[in-house]
Image 1 (cartoon, rainbow, N blue to C red):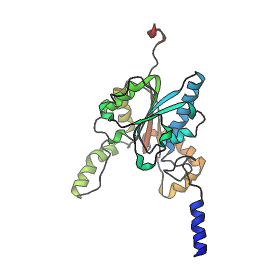
Image 2: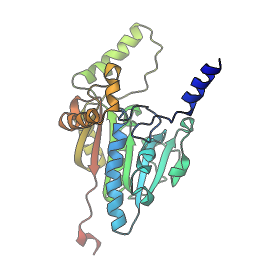
Image 3: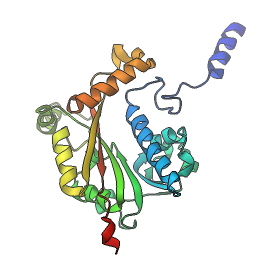
Image 4: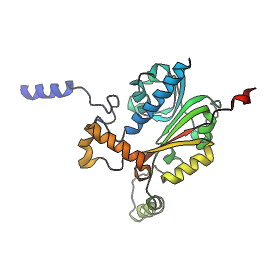
Length: 264
């Protein structure tokens, strides 16, 4: 019994295993599920560095912040000290570190966040939110409204290879009714890269920068590979080359800067 107690104490004293050294949601060092947050943190940190050189701070809106993954990844970056993050809809069941935010609020993205002034943010993050919304035009227009000229939006969502999105949209509900399934499906949208990109461009008024995919294959017997940096690097390369074939995509958009003579 004494030996067993020593073993248990050693386990409890072991340091927590964190994705990318910061994220407790996954224990794999290079978790492919959390790779999207590592990617956006890299880009936002570069924007913050440029803002600091210009003598200003970077304002960020994290929509559907949930468990607070984005600020955890940003906190580990060298320019976090010049980033001000406002969070919409933080989920406190995840023991979120609220000190990482400048402010937090609860709002309705489908109503366009009327409490927020236009052109308020240098960066808008919206990860894993749109697939839960029945109406997309107003939320997507809100990304463009809230960004300052020259600002960037990072929009992430699960996607399907065509025509699998049609099966998810039309056949899965029929199957659920036929089998009297009690499983609650909270994804009401079934995106492909093409239709998500088209909807964002049509509704947001923003310009396309890039699309990067995450997780063509992951988990299961391949999960131990997520401890290896080369596997992460290979998947990042694959996601950049074939984003439409991935399980998740992150679309980066930019608001055109105002012409210099427009202020005269």
